[in-house]
Image 1 (cartoon, helix red, strand yellow):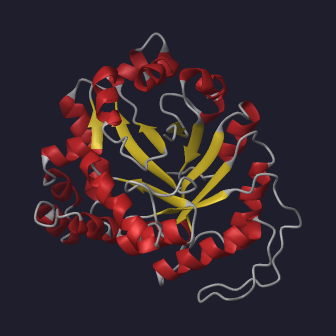
Image 2: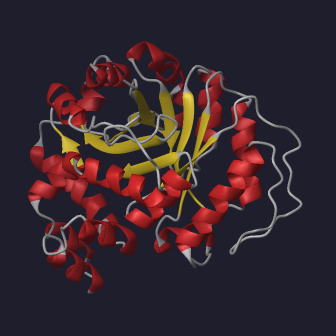
Length: 336
């Protein structure tokens, strides 16, 4: 049986990034194996990982995820390969299409042919990071003369932020696995099965092959204050669930009618109404909240066969700021 890894998303709450060294250094002793980042919200994906690698080289480093439209494939390869020189374990370079609004906001770029661009980038990166000629057999990018000039001792894995079957097929068929998020515990088997089927991956007992990663990113809000948690969750979910890729994802999962009112409000320009129209039960399922002991049980529900890493994005709460043992104490409780 594969041992599931546990990661936390940087930057952590309740601490300035530069002040997180002690917490990051302690993560292995708290039961965590990984640190991950995304790209957005004012923070880039790689600087926090470089700091974490210097502070605690025993941690795996992952991006979940970097948009393929905002960084060229050569820069992605160089950055991941350089990070691989700083860690004693490995780097997982998660890339994805992101959402059109994010692409435009970050770089003013276009969001054309996302599936093909992700597939091309993944194929390029896997060749480049293994020291192979990258060639020029791509539809959406061209860098035939690219070479790293060195091969990392442990070449980074290339994962894909994926939602629906075709992109999941790229993740499992062309890449080293998938990063999935904003789904319920009951959704996980369907997503993994769709990825296996679309990617042509044969498994045992419905499990992807061992070399395929499935990273499940969970949003956790450790508080007993249900109203506070739901308000914080709606602020995020009311926007992201109504972005085209996520709206289509939840339609595929069978929630089209459940989200119809929220989506119509969002399209009409009513962001507040879109957030308010989200059903409480769905907010609770996607934005996990409660005391740490209760959260541990809810997190454990995501441990389906095929899941290789649970990644926790911890939201700030009033209780966290009041804890005498601080963030490290909270993380220890969540890990159990």
